[in-house]
Amino acid sequence: MAQSEITSHFTEVNGLKIHYDEIGSGAPLIFCHGGGPGSSGLSNFSKNMRAFAGKHRVIAIDLPGYGQSTKLKIAEPLWGFYAKVLAGFIDKLGLGKADLVGNSLGGAASLKTALDFPEKVRRLVLMGPGGGYSLFEKSPSDGIRALLTFYMPPGPSIERLKNFVQYLVFDPSTITDDLLAQRLKRALDPETAEYMPLRIGPNMAPITELWRERLDQVPHETLIIWGREDRVNPMDQGLILMRQIPNARFLVMPKCGHWAQWEKADEFNRLVGDFLGN
Image 1 (cartoon, helix red, strand yellow):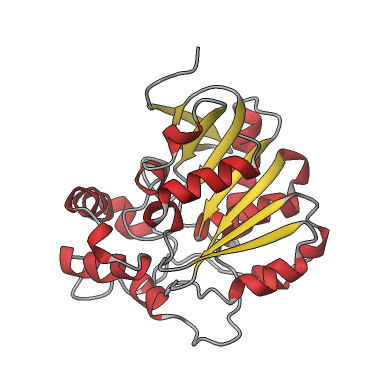
Image 2 (image 1 turned 60 degrees about the vertical axis):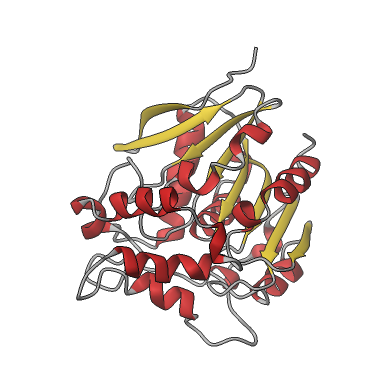
């Protein structure tokens, strides 16, 4: 019988404490969250996990630096570091290989895992992934600026969090007070504030241009989803990825920002379920 409630777990990967939430049973499916202040696996994918639990072992991981996982200074290139964590996590849980569904930072981490550890990945779903290049919009975007400067003086606050979160969505009314409160609590955690990897300061992790890598060697079936009104990673970044990844299809959602899995949850769950053979 499929597990009916989301449960919280910890494991150790490469000497790091990794927290994850899971529900269901079946083919492994790992959700990888974005990199904003207060982010975690469950907060990013609370509208999605149960939709896949009937046929999948659904796992939402907290990547190091976020949620309840280890906080540390990441000195090596971030996407490669996270790829090693994800590959080790798949091994530690005995999954063999897994479908990876990644948003923003989690999308870049998922794509880099497919590049460096292709045998660990079954299929890829990427929503507005990081590491890209915009053909038509300014760089960095206003959303990225709000992210990187969140901890700068005068310091984090609910007003600053609201300002950042508005860049995640087309319709700000979809953001609940509960979500903001949860994210602010995590963002104010002293270790999170010191070591969040995407922030201006001495502990910011090195970021590489993932679009320059040999994406033509990614063999996996890939679904790229982008919100047309994405103000964090502009939608035209997806054109470069779509042209380079041999088995990629590119889907654009209108009236949708950076958080397709949140704003268009029902449509997202149906489309991704069909793609994964749900």
